[in-house]
Amino acid sequence: MNDLPHNHRDKPSFAGLPVRVERLALAAVPAWLTLSFLVSADAPVELKAIVGIVAIVSAIRPTEGLCIVAATVPLGDLIAIAMESSPVRLSEALVVAFLAGWLVSPSDGPARGPSPGAAVRYAAMALTAVILASIAVNALQIRTYYPAMWPDTLLRSLHNYFGPGSDEWGAVAGGRLIEGIGLSVAVVQLLRRRPILALWIPEALGAGCVAAAAAAWSLWHGYALTAVRARHALLGDRIVAHVMDVNAAASYFAMMACLAAGLAARERGPRRIWWIVVAGSAAEGLSLSGSRAAIGVVVLAAAAAATWLIVSRSSKAVRNGVFAAVLVALISASAIWAARSELAGTQSGAGFRVQFAQSSARMISSHPWLGLGIGRYYQASSMFLNPQLAFAYGSENAHDYFLQLAAELGLIGFAAVAVMLIGAAAPPLRTMARAPDNYRLLGLIAGVAVFLMTCTTGHPFLTPEVAFPFWLATGLMVVLGSPDRPLAGPAGLMATRMVPAVCVVLLAGSIPLRAREAPPGPRRVLPVEGLFDWEDGADGRRYRWSREYASVFVGREARRVEIPVRAPLGDGVAADISVDGGRARNRPLGREWTTITVDLPFVPLIVQARRINIRTSHVEPLPDGRVVGLQFGPPKMLEP
Image (cartoon, rainbow, N blue to C red; front, side, top):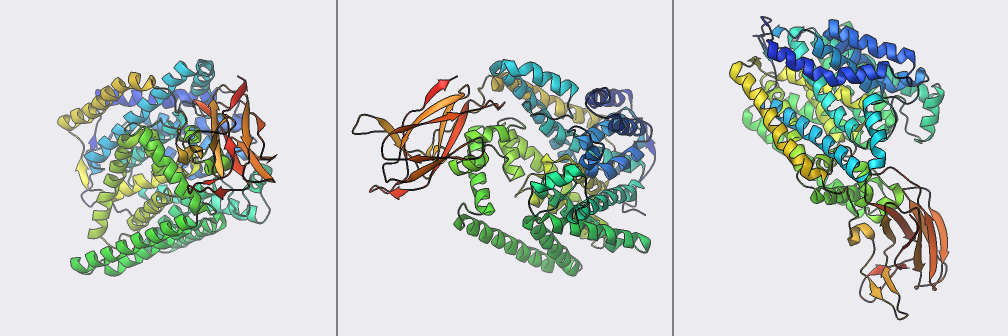
């Protein structure tokens, strides 16, 4: 029935009072957020009923509550749309409700069972501490530098956490990571109590996948809710119904395709037919999403799994040789792809990704150890993007979640994530080496790996309907692939408490120092501004030559700005002007100096400056080798 270790024991180990108190303390925040949702006036009563039922069931029967969450979280957005609700993160509300109920439920469990190693547990604790400290720093910065925004952001975080609005604190971005880790922990602990969850959770995930793929198929044929059709009109030919981010949806379908394929190979009879249906649905959803990156990594995963099955019973030397050959092939293919992307320049999506990576590197170098702040990448990106990206997007995510995480949480936070994920994968990989016919575990490993590989070209963790199924699959992978261990004794419990305590003390000491730092400001360098150094003209004016794309930074309080500009290289030159990635406005220019007036609408960005982006229609090389377009004088703020 399951692939748990043969020496698994169900002997109960009753939690002591300290553990019970800890669980109740941890339940305080999710319980508050759930109660605030239930009393909110913004959500319809049907959604409140669903969230309330999940919380109650999870408190009484947490295993059943976990299965309900596994089946419904991929469909949270569709359910909210069907209920004609105002924008609400229903999937996240369901997960938080489950965590609140699970944490207040009795915690008795077996004396021993599969669990991750100490390094994974400590890395998860350290990551949680880094996230909480980062949220605190963000909040203190807002209170210090943007006091007018403080009351609204505080009230929204306390009473409308699952509602729409910007994430100035980073509480949503950070909370989603902590909730995902909590979901994996719940899978590990509950599956030790009820091994049948090894069957129930994948089946619930499969049901959600079939429903999501069916919704995409219906949309393809013109049958969908009005709001879903309106959303699809913004996405072009790529078809996804259950979320807005097509690349995140592709990551989800890719993961589910691998998981379903592994279970289809493992099961027999009607169960095999079911998993073939799930695998086909995931493949159909992946195809409709049109993500070449996700399709490519699924093909690579299939090739790697097939190679493993062929050589798994060969000698160690043969396995190592094949592994080395496959690794060299993957690295070579990645290098060729990166080189072609660089040569393709900025006209392709891959070329843009190279520029995003360069911008992320600038962000990481500005705050290398603890980062700019969780959830701050999108807002701060306008200070770091190169002029072409700023012209096209204004502000944007990294298109590489690992780089985004390194920029937001620094190298320390990134190291904690790396240790947690690598440590979680190591025991299942060793288990596969001993039991190569464990197809369910092979499917889970492949699915988790595929999802993480797609994070190098996207950010699926920012979409709750996609991120939470990943954490559920990761918890399954850990518990089905880890060795049977006894629960921690008194010494182990003391260490478990000391590690987070030390992390909290060290990070808490850094909060006041980091909170005094001003929010991100503009990078006054050529790759960001697209402007060369100041020069003095024959008429006494000071000016700067621009490249084809250039950016002018002004104070955050500016609402109307005048920019002196001219096109000395020829007549008939035009400049396109874009603010915050909005539609460009065309302005003809001549050889004489003129002024461009730009209006800057207020946006609640936690940055020190506003950015005006300009593209010129004509560039020429100067005798000194610089390729230039326009000349800009010092900007003048007309209205603060």
